[in-house]
Amino acid sequence: MAIQRNVRQQAAETRATIKRAAAIGVTLPQWLRSALQQHALPPHAGLLVRYFVVPEQEGDLHTGIWLTDSLECWEFEVMVSRETQQMLDVEEFTNATASYPAVAAIPGTGPSFGYLARQVLHETRDA
Image (cartoon, rainbow, N blue to C red):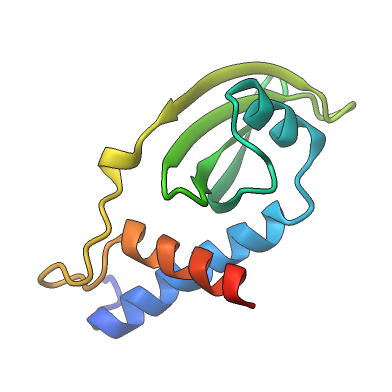
């Protein structure tokens, strides 16, 4: 049986997940810096707001969302060598801003992921 969480708990959990991704992104590994620069996105002008690593046969598939300071969401999937931590392949790097609208309150779920990600971005910039 799934645990039932209220809207506030769901939003808090999503914010915590975004903050964990942002903390990982602070170190900005070279492969991510390179992928951002290849797409004309300044590495210092955004925040990693979603991040997962999936082990694959060729290496590790790093997936996530980069939120720019201009509030664009860029989804990426990058294959990275486990041994060298070098980027092997950029499988996806697309502007997905339309997929993550900033909605303050969605019935039953509360604020959208895009709304919470923008909040975390603004908090980190104001700190």
